Image 1: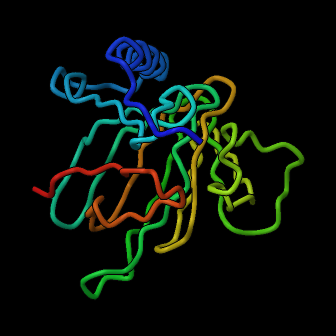
Image 2: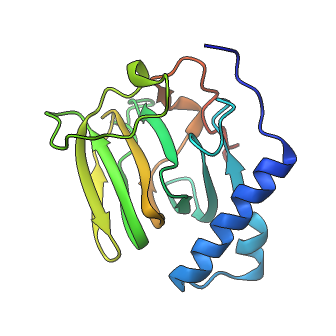
Length: 185
């Protein structure tokens, strides 16, 4: 594998525009500040259309976080886990789908014949039990459980509800990932 390359500004702009269109289609209301806060992240892996997402923190305190999370069709948020730290069992995360379909992969027996893992990345996507959520449905990921998300055929617009958050402590299966560092406030 080659070293990761940061996405160009043009690729980032295109991904963000596509995500904005999905949020608009979802009908989920955002304030002008929320729209301005939409960020693009490729986790340092250099393949934003395949591995990345668009997000905006809607609420962030010392104890909880609510994030708007947008995945384009087939776009993957790479496998990672939220380990314990500072006497906490780790971050618990609930994903609630607002639009489209989100595929969530957790450890367990594979229950689907086809899993669209980004090319050449099979060793870094070990969770193969698929849970599919559509608009109005949700799924919770327990602390320290390896998991990854993927946008369905139309993409996905979701809310992610999380307890205590220090994104710098997330552990990504792909050692090349820089994660999703966000300064604590």
